[in-house]
Image 1 (cartoon, rainbow, N blue to C red):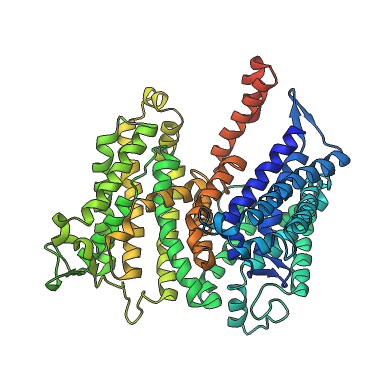
Image 2 (tube, rainbow, N blue to C red):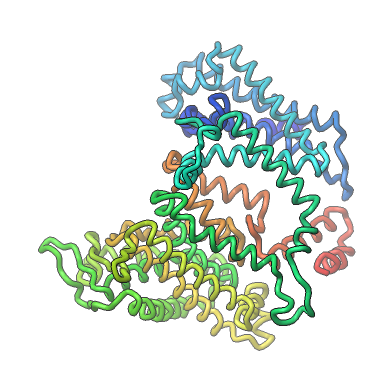
Length: 586
């Protein structure tokens, strides 16, 4: 019983926190399906649902897996959900009795409108009882989710996820349909979320795709591939070629389908993908925790401006930097990359003997130094100081200017594909294997003849070179630069992208950038809660999926081996730990 109460109290505390930071009241009008299912309602039922799901899952007791019966799962989930609702209801009744104005003196987001939402427009006591009942039902559904067979559970989860996702994307999908001259009245309300008919169609399509994938997935993959001896082009997988062709076609069609606004957001996403790919080499491949990566971002942007004829803002008017050139953007990029690699070597040289937390602190200091220097009077003649730089080249090709979001999308896509290709080749090369060995055990790698000093410097150089491309594209996209764009928070954001997606995973970097940069850019309502979303996403991933959203295979196996060893130790059989780990690795 204590476990149920703790789970319910935790869920209730999360709900109260969401209410006090303003999320529940802020999104009371953001309709997901019809006018009944809003984001505020989702925030109310999701914590007790998760609590019920947690308490209703099978447990490991004394080293043995214990299945939960139907009555236990439903009852435990309902109890946890009811405790959650009771805590929120009690807090609501207390706030109403104590005086909302007094509460507001401490928590500014606590308003009478919030009380009305939490009580469903009823009296506080009656509304609290309704909330308890609703939370109990949500908790029972979460606990009962484990009872469904996998062949039923997966389609249900897919249907709910698809409906909620399409509800969130109510500002994107209608634009795409309009670009294709397709009617969307059946799918979306004019100023709201999905229609009930549209939600039913989306759910049915998700269920059908899920069932088809489970039943016919292997057969479809087999039909799309053709045989051979496994060598050369004869062994090439036709399915992969088709999938690649479809992906390329979609990537090329996105600006035409989704319009200018989404193209602008995706352009920003690709800038951060480049930064993430560079940091992934340093952190994910080589295992060097770098918190000052903003230095390469700033270096690439300002160096591009200097080499392409950018001007400085000053009190005397527009002036030229003391060091300046008027190169074409595509001639300047190789120079920027080489110089950034040299800067990476210079930054890496003083920290060669540092590891872990000490390396992170030193690189954090270096990143902060760059932020201060670009705004200081010392570098004002070179980069403009606080006033910054303007008139950076737009990388035009003929009459095509890349200041247009749609055109910039294609330029950024070309750079991202190039960076992905280079990163992929590095990972599979001798250099990548040396980085992996150094990351897993530096002393052993050194004893095996790997020059850790050289490979550390190479990691900083390659990471800096790719990161500088992100800075160069940022300069092209914006056209003007100020120190405010290069704060240390950028380093934290890029590190969050790499960790969220999965250390060492190239697809993970792309997914992490889409989640942490793309979603806030599309869902502008969440802009003021961006940092809160970062923190919540990182905590959730570290607890629920420490390997990342799209993990690197090797990293995932390492974590699985650690879990096997921990389970063996918890079962009281430390002597069996090594065989268990060896078996898991095999």
